[in-house]
Length: 113
Length: 115
Picture 1 (cartoon, rainbow over the protein chains, first blue to last red):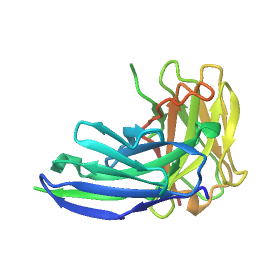
Picture 2: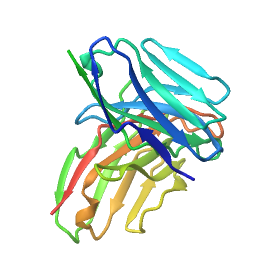
Picture 3: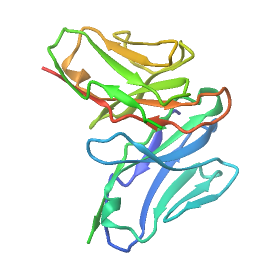
Picture 4: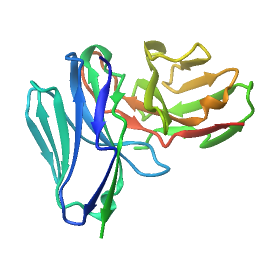
């Protein structure tokens, strides 16, 4: 019940295309869903986060869509650029465990020029 | 504002030894969480410290321990190292107020190799 399942494992997109990464969770106590971006040799960096009281959040080219009833959320990267090539992790936490993030397995994104 | 600093960046240890990793959080942050990252298991939560107290713990054996000092700096210790402990160890700091969600910022990690 603590798991967050992420798909796909890897993704190749052409420059200018839309990258879509999906995550699903079981624990209904989760109430915070961040996405992290990680480049080789670096720690994860927070991209964007959403709470279940909204269905969508957009920041620049990055959008999170959230479906509470389906217990799914996804990251859309619009106009994907080669500089977006990285590993993306979805995560979740609950208000009773604010310092504990449960991560998905990660998606390696390659944006081809 | 300085980010999260982890030292050392790289470590090579022999099986059976012990190791101590250090994490200095962002100034003003009182919560420090530790994660283990491996290709097979991904990012797994080890434990969280807040105001010098362990507030949360993951499913790791007792060989993994940590502590936090009054200046919020944290250390984690792994005793009796095993080959499977080879991983990138990440710490994340946040303001950490109770029941108030605050962003977690990660350091660059310590790459531990056990031979």
